[in-house]
Every structure is written in C-alpha cells, then in structure tokens.
Length: 393
Image (cartoon, rainbow, N blue to C red):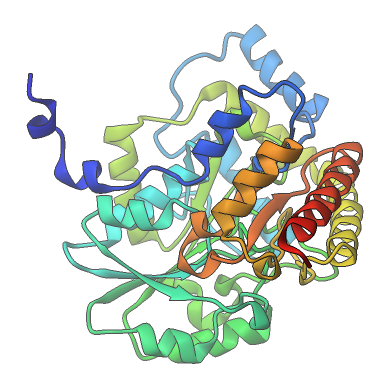
C-alpha cells in the first residue's frame, strides 16, 4: 500500500508537537525531574472521584444528551455566574465537550471557511495553529513581547487584521507564559474589534488560576458578549485532566452549529465524568482555593530563585508556568533544554515549541511538588555554573 498517497496532505504537513520529544526522552530516565507537563500534581479531590464511582454503582452508564446532562449544564451556568459574573442559559448556550481541546476544535471548524484567517498570539499553546489548518483556515501569528509581559496590544492586533480575518484567539491566562489580560487590556482589544465581524475564541482553561486579581473574560465586556466564545473545563481548576471534561459557552447560533458537529463526531462526553463534573461544579470551590494557594507559593518561590541564579523571569499572574529568558546563556531554547535534560536530568520545554515568539525562553511548570521544584532549581543553578565555566564567563 502507498500510504503516502492515501493520507491527507494537510495532516501530513502539520508538524507534531514540539513538546513530545522531551517527554519521549524523559520516559527512559529513571531519576529525572519533570517541570514539563502541564498537569496538576494534585489527585482529583475525593468527593469528585466518589461522585463518579457512585454513578457507576448506580448503573449510570448510558449516553447522555448530545449537549451534556441537563443537570451539569445547569451547574455550569450557575458556576459561570457565581465565579465570573458571566450569564448563560443552560439550554442553548452551553455545550459539554471532551476536554477544552474538543471545544477549541469545534469552535474553529464551525466558524472557518477555506482560507479564512485566524489571528493567534504567540507564544501560546500548541494546538491553535494546527487546528486552524485542519479546519481549512490560515493561522496569522502575532509575536507577543516579553517587555509587555506577553500581552496582546491593540496596535499589534490592528496591524494583523485583514479582510479575511474571521477569528481572534485570546489564550489568557497563557500557557506557556503565565501572562494575563486585565480589563483595560481587553477594552483596548474590544475597541479595535468593534466595527469588524471578527469572532473571539477565548480559551479560559486557566481562568481559576490567577494570582492577586480576579480573571476577566472578554465576554464580561457588554459589547463583546455576543461575539465571544468562552472555552473552559475541569482539567486545571479541579485537577481532572484524565476525566476529559470541558465546556463551551457562546451565542445560541454558534452552540447550535457546534452541537451538530459534536453530535456526529462524539455523540456525548463520558457519562461517568459528567456526574463527577456536577459534583465539582456544585461543591468544588474550596478545592480551587486550596490548589490556587499552593500554586501561588510555588510560583513566588520559582520566580524569585530563577532571577537569583541569573535567569530573568517576569512574574506570571496566571496559570501554573514560568517563562524565564535564557538568551544570556547564548543557547537556543532547544539547546538549553536538551543540555539541561542530559546533564542535570530536569525537563523543561523550549519556548519555540509555542510559536515564533518563544525563542530565547523556556517553559517550566510549577504544578509539581515543592521538593521537586527546589531540587530542579538547585540543578539548574549547577547547570548554569558549569555552562558559564565552559564558556569562560
């Protein structure tokens, strides 16, 4: 069989995630520390796990409605109102998805016609560009600047808009930078968009993980509510990565189109996970607070110590990543990560894996134990000392 001629050309030409090869190397190391994977180190809280177990004991193993259990959609509507002052109808404005990733995929596929353009601020999570291409669109990357703490500015957005622009991705709080957009930042973006027909895809999976301020969504701006798709989920806020639970809130015509696509491709999100998610929405606010407090202490420790050992690192205000600049080492992002992993057995991710604006930086995730974080900092200090010695500095 000639598989090369059988496979879709578009899929063949998309590069695999730049993150994966470091995980592949890491799997063969027995005593390595990983600050690479973007996953909470917390186990899903017991009361949430118990709700999933109980649903199985009760025999709740059938399909749910395509949009998700009515009870869950009602709880999501209450949660969004309670936590973010965002108001959505459980019938028609909320769709339960298989993780936030499916929600992003559905959003792009229902919005894009061939050659429509999607503005994607970078560095950002690795999926937006490939999913845009798979949906027939064209990614337009806008490089964010470290001196702006990786915020998108109105001037950058205005320069990127063309007659073909259909969607702006707003990936804040940001993976990999930890950067956020505050209300005044969003108001500047809204001013640029007000006379256009551009939809905003706001990926808010880290909305609960902000430090020192409350998350503000583009949908919180009255003039932007009808043109914003809000993607969220349970993976980061409730430590439920393996449950694969996400949701999307949007205007009814958009949700109707997404539900149609979800109906044919997925049918419904996992039933057991939906019962667990009901419990998370209903009684999980305390879990969020506890995890966020722990992340905050790790965040402050890591930023302080990275700067102490000579890697300039701005203070991230969201998510659970730091994005230190490694340009002073004279190494590329990939060289730094490869040498650090081989010499000190610590995995961090090269910034260029997250788009052009990431070169000269690395991503370190602090969703790890404080013990591992402290040891990783010690090993990084040793790595930098040895590197400077070799370089004669």
